[in-house]
Image (cartoon, rainbow, N blue to C red; front, side):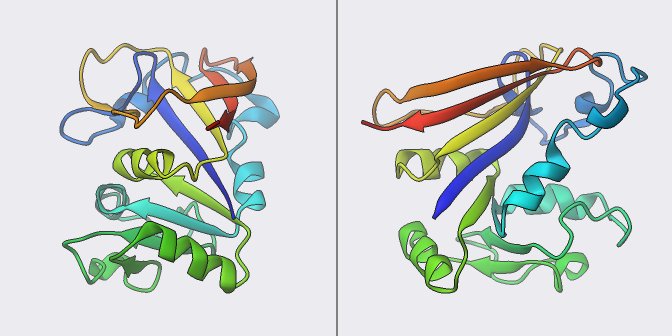
Length: 187
């Protein structure tokens, strides 16, 4: 199964402030820039390429705190699996939208493959780090916001070994965000 990351960070590599907030994403750069057909910075196209989403519990909690309406829900009818060793039942607002999973990540991937899934979107800092250390992430799209937070929750943590990034490309947007795309080579 192909596993991909599509995530935003600050220019210094943080996915959120220490309290988990991401409000800086809405004020960084030029929020009023005319983005034309790039307003979503590739998210709609990416979502069309995946058939399931695997996220961490903290990511779920952040989404739950947004109290999104059906019209605001960004994931459509994509199957969402939330990894958690502590929470067994989703919050009431997400009960019909996510399923909880506790257990071995490799077993989850094998199960999803056996059910016909081919491309997973992996989201959430700790979850992305775990997938990288299991050598499961195939490609990453990182959109860097033009802001330095100085501290916060980093996208990357300790890796088991050096990991080569290949076929790198970058794109600048009118709002001063820069999107980097990488393929991962674990050998």
